[in-house]
Image 1: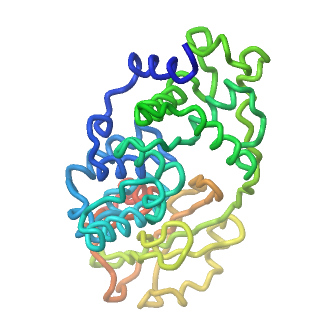
Image 2: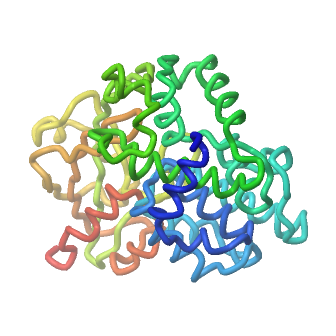
Length: 349
């Protein structure tokens, strides 16, 4: 039995029953693929179910506000996916009359859809012979064929795509693509896979050469930047707070946060005292402040580590754009901010 048949046979026995596998509706398949970018199935599944329930069609998703979508997406990370999701939904609903592009090349033109996602949708929804290459596929192919070309170099991306395209089952591309991804996720796992039960073990080069924990190779190109954030939780006597929308490019675009002061290091209470808070949006120059967390809350993103302190600033009156503390949870916010809101006792002020 050859490589692809072994994979498909394994998949028929071990595949998980997932809602997007029981449909050929391109809307649901597209939705699942966008959610599962950079996200494991166990984390993404509740979000998929929530989106399908609230937005059962692409027209429902298109009619929603970006703020509603970001709120439902909250906690999933990589929020540009949610913004692209909304943009593409509006394009399909209003420009394409709700009809999804039905081939790889057309799908690739959609905002937020790259090679992998276009291949997945084209094969699963439209049975096009388009090979998927995601992290799971890189791992399976690199280990089985003993390929040490870095997967994040142009040469590696091209080599693996060519190989994947030569292996796909042309009679059942949807099943094959899902089989190799599922195999990478559940059998050929990143760390300590059980090679003794692997149906591909007899032909696996990395197993023969003791390279299972070495392959695939990915060059470290990303430098992690450390930043120091000071959030001002400004509260007045009427239990209103300042909560502002992040604008412009960068992390958390269009999400909400407390006023932010970025510093070059983690600030002590005495160092915070030296900041000129009168230049912030506080109406009154009279205010008291206290530090909520002595130890920095460290929030790790893919390219940044945020060392964060929350400062409670109490004042008599805030600007008219301030909002009631009871409405804070209605706004889409980064997990870091949302966790603080749920943790902090505003009633105690």
